Image 1 (cartoon, rainbow, N blue to C red):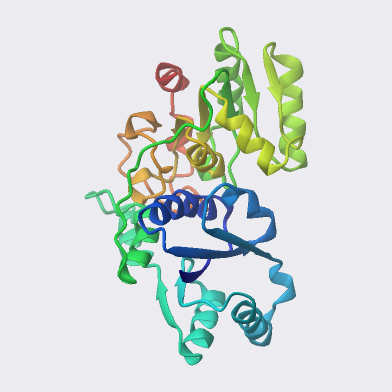
Image 2: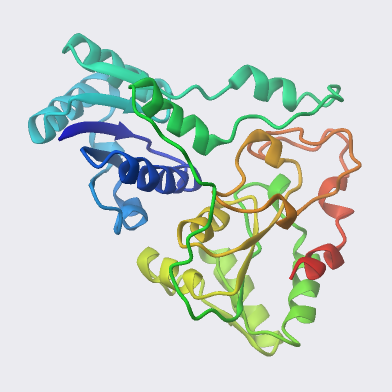
Length: 321
């Protein structure tokens, strides 16, 4: 059994995207075991994948070079890996790579395609093309090791009985989020025919969604009420999830639930559409030449009007449902 030590520490959605890749890679290569090192609270993302051992850590316990050296030694002692997969490629993981190379281990790392993503998000570049999907970039790391990996890009529904619509109206950055008044109107329309379940996290989101629950019949806020394991189970039982370009889209992919995704400053061309999700379920303002202006949605709008989200007609989302 070959043992691969893999690491990716953030963000939540990016870590979630590794899980379906691991599942299909390990099905095709049953003589391999993956040790996934990430933040402790991400453990349930990998709970039902055979041949994955999850090692949760608190990064605050391993600060600076000496902290990372201690972490690398602990991981070698506990797992004795054969190969290293850096699925993150940031300063912290570059340091780990260096330490492991010095110990004689072969290290393989993700190619994030930074230059092509910079070109894609240049607002003066009018020739926008689809870049390699992030899940394929993860798979490439294992291909470089010499393994065959064919990703299906198909959803695998976890639950047979499905009902209700999930709605996750929030995202980490403004550039990824439908204005809340539009989201509210959307829910009012959809809730006339279907049960709507709200997903979110954090105090402010929780308060907003509880207000909506009180104001709109046939809705229920689950924000702050579920563990990650319970949240995944609930999403697996939904008929469809509506999400921004955010972690909830990737959670839906993980449990095989169709997701209608809303994109503003970001774009599926950058490669972050959820695993197995359809391009037909993407909702976006198509005729803005400035899109995408950002890979992560964290930039200010250079036009100052957030047209990519303000001009988005919620009827487009309703039509997909």
